[in-house]
Image (cartoon, rainbow, N blue to C red; front, side, top):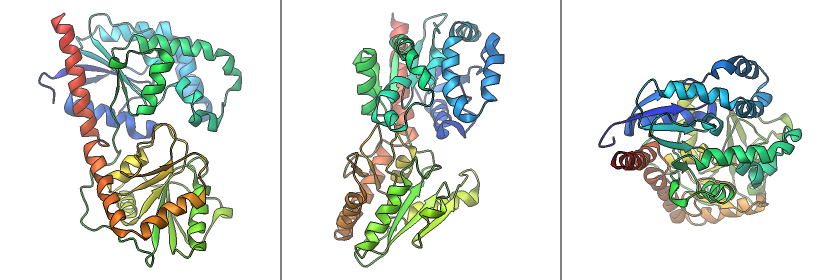
Length: 391
């Protein structure tokens, strides 16, 4: 907790009390601020006089909702900002903290001196211009003509925020260059795992040339999360004489991707004890979690590190995988042969594999947990608030 408990107004387009959206990150950010920084008040998610528009968008199909919501918010930004301004005047806050939805901060000017802060794992333009966004393409191609307007809106928001808190070096570098930010106001603070701390585990699964190799895939979308490449890696390992096996959590691969060496658990709800037990067992017994997807961050890698489980992924976006520390991030374009090579290297080096598991857990303990995030952010916010008090 900060030396002086801060009063924080929390602003996001979705309530942090909803644990299902934003992959649970919104909830974790909110809880970390409450635990480490002070009293947190959730500001209304309503659009005030433009609320009928928001409700119509929320009732639309998810693919349209996700892309239209922030664009429409910008269009109605002046009206919504007036409502936020009135909400801020109801109490005396030290900090206005925005999470994920930069548009929620658009045109908002605090009614009295306070620190403004913001965190997200991507912004619309950094995402769109990155290899991550280009891999998925644009759903609303007609909106490309409006990209300069969106960039101006983003730049206006971020240049008026006192403290940007990015979870990755990739995003900080992209945002600093794109928006012309002051590096001192743009700070990297890694996000954490969206699971309770499982604690260190005494038993480390042995990895030798003669034992089965357990791969783990976690993802709701088999194709978007790189499932086909994971399957190809499984088959490549087996062709080389390795008794590789794959467990799939989060989805059901199509029938044409079925394999005798694959076990499908399917979707799990971590708030259900039985499901959480299955999730934990899978992470405890796997040798590698493999998710070669295009990610702006990736909570799955933080969760793997919490269990001391090394990750295999692509070196893209802001994935929180440091090569040789909590796994390996291979160059974009790497295929099943390259991923299989990494696995086989460790079957021939059991001591090296054991060391990798220990360093993965240490990475979680030191960086990839929400207590570490909350402690650092609390100190940063308190220092900024003190500046206002001394002014």
